[in-house]
Image (cartoon, rainbow, N blue to C red):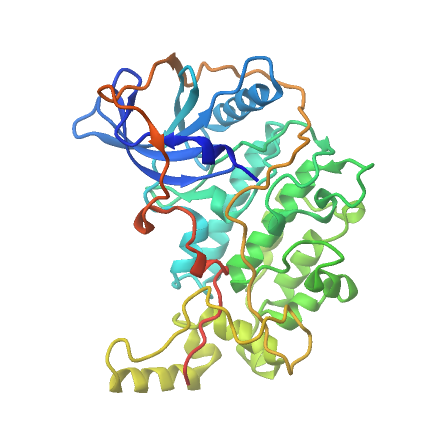
Length: 432
């Protein structure tokens, strides 16, 4: 499928808004556009900003309505401390540009992949997770349902706070038949659309995604590839609601909370406020080390995958941590072999409950939102307009040069995870 971002040329070196913003490099791509890093040359030194470039849709078309709606939704939430600030909307003859804060620390997905300090830290998990709840709850209070909640759509702000971005799939329709909107790993069963005659609740769909993110933060694993009866892990969960706790090192309190989030739609009545209160009442989200030791192969493998290399490793696997220390002292710095995150394990079995088969480990969140061919156009229930972000019409300028087709960003510039890292927080298989 051709994405809109595939048809946008490279604008690096060009300027917009009367030479105010100069594009310096590509930060990443999405389903609806390219994200560029740009210098705001009205400040000294220039301030770096992120600019989302979208191909401008024709007037009075559905795509034009959706683009304007994305802008309106983002503007309506822009002042919230957990939503990335939208500073300016620039309209050019062929493109729309959304000028936003540049979050140089990247997205939350990459943060979770490349950091270990938080693993096992209940306080950190609760504080950061509450920021996710704050952002989504604020949207819901304004009647906006995001429909693409995932770690990639939370950026780590320059002050360390998480901020929500990308309102391209958001809607004000509480009940919708836009099936398949979002990323499969985070979709609720009803959003996948096995019953195409029944609308699903967009607010409840966002809450389902929150549960998947929480499990990812606490275990480094996603529960399933998609919440479909054809998915082996989800099928096992439907048969046994303690399936996750038997395979992942979560506490009884965390397991109960996730069970409430992952209920079938007609009995899923938990709210974001409920989740906030219940997670605060949970003493720890993590399984006791002794219970991990008594568990089966998959449970121990998941715990070792998650805690490997972190300060908590010594509590869960003290003998492994000690062997690692001794051998590390006897080898060069690179002597201790670790499988790279995202490397393919020896077995490709998915979440088998059998303790005799090696687990394939965690599943990969999709890097792009899925485009749906028949998107419903919800009525605009409010009209924030463009008052909070200046709108101007300018042509691109680059000393007469013509745009050239976009080239893939260099590895150091890619916002998406490289192919060899495409399993979310994959196991750290220690060579012991």
